[in-house]
Length: 282
Image 1 (tube, helix red, strand yellow):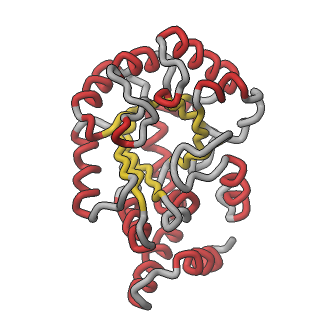
Image 2: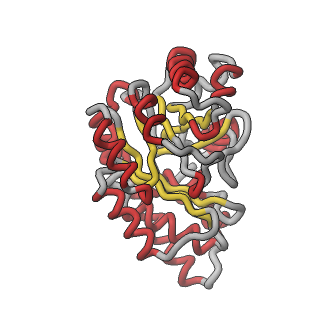
Image 3: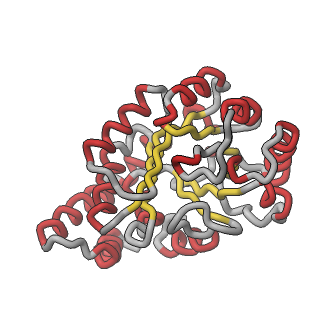
């Protein structure tokens, strides 16, 4: 699609409430985004490649991450997710979180799929599947086989502890999840600043949209931080377009599923690829 057609397509997708002034504001920001797209991609690429050049030198943003649990690692065919760029292992979704099983799963995922790994032990307060008393021990086991690790920004002490034991070439994602709402802009900016101050390389924000204005605010936040490493997604029906649009505003990674969604509104890998090809992002 040409930039003008892309603008038209996404304007029809949004139809923001609040009248023509908000429509014009969105058009202005989106047009600026398209104009700076190549320069933006170069900046973000340079940032991300500092530690991961070996893995992503031939890839094009946005990177697509496939979310897997342990059973997926063992049951999926080795070529079933060839088209994705990374794998996120949701360790809190594992049926067995013993050290031996975790190491076996990590090794299998690495050798079977030949993809960089993001390891996550999500806290139950931010969408984790089960209560895990000592998440640090799981991170200690996972780090040796991981290229990125994801820890909640609001887990402050845990994030710092994980950062202190990371390998020098492992990226730290500091994340924030809200399954009820999209907090105001000031709060979200504070989350970004807090994550950076705690030493996160990339900030990930996943919030729930109650209406389209929430989605627009998150996209503008993404655009403001596009040069410093950010991942964003808006969950729920109103936020569903973010799964496709956020990379244009600067989000580094899009998450999809192979077998079942791990978050509201998450698209499958095949759906993401089909849409990205249609709008020339792949």
